[in-house]
Image (cartoon, rainbow over all chains, first blue to last red; front, top):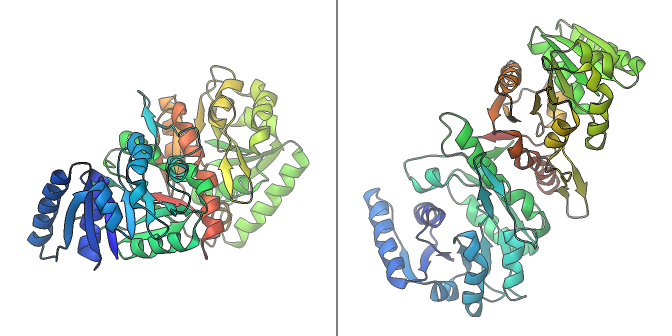
Length: 222
Length: 222
């Protein structure tokens, strides 16, 4: 399967790219608005993987071409670009491409981070609204500890929650996720349940802020 | 220390009463609107503790008298009664009594449970608003797995998040919580951060709904 990390030069994109490349046999595509930046990221990720003796099968493209080639396209861009990025790549998406959104709207003040969803209720629902109707949209990877994810020396045991209205698309993302060592996908229901999933992201940042020695917090549902 | 479970005949009240009674040396007060109902609950909890060879030091009262005698009063009533219960017992509270609120506003539909906070932003902030100004209010015990908590045969390893604006009151609740075997209190910041803590409660219910063999879900932040 071909997995594209759109905005794959950011921290969640990097972490997922490295973990998918190391732990699975899928082909990893890095997308960026600037294809040159994507290729530079590929070179850096390949160097990191090869230094650890891992096979590295990554390729860099502009976001639109990465989406066009992908079976699963993960929209790892900042939340306020999510809607526009979807519209920019929508011509490259279709019913056969699962669009995955990990973005969360937040704002911060002196107390900490607060969940700040778009008017439609959640970023996941916004992405679904902006994509063409036939594109299956799945929310996932919202609450990963980015530092742990991007550091291949860290062995973790973490969960990620998956929301979506398309059963097959959800199953695809769930299966892919479970191929990453130490990561477990759990079902949190349809896209209508995305807000409660997304609001865990400001919470983990607050937990990191207020507790010593918890600077990069993930979650396990038990 | 004297810990009162107001509304201590409900499921979270029962679970906390049993765990505090078994695992700590504190005196446990069960409060209910009907003192007779509180005393019946005490008899039932004592029977359960004694059957396991645990010392049981519990007493039942009306909510107001339980609050009056308590150092820490835990408001384990349904969310829509939380404000009114605070006003009913407010004469029994003072600066020396920590008022703890675990309640969460939710509503459900066919998709699952959704966070539904009061207009002031969270039930924790509502409770603080309705209590007299000098009463220190702490939010805690929102996301415990009630079934696991109330079943003393279950050994768990769970976290609960603590929010509040009064540092001493938060420290008191944190220390008490950490005396329960397998329960760890983490700081999620001031009351202004309560909404993100409370919204985990509908989420754990949704996870229980959509995943096999996860019918009573708690959380560990790692």
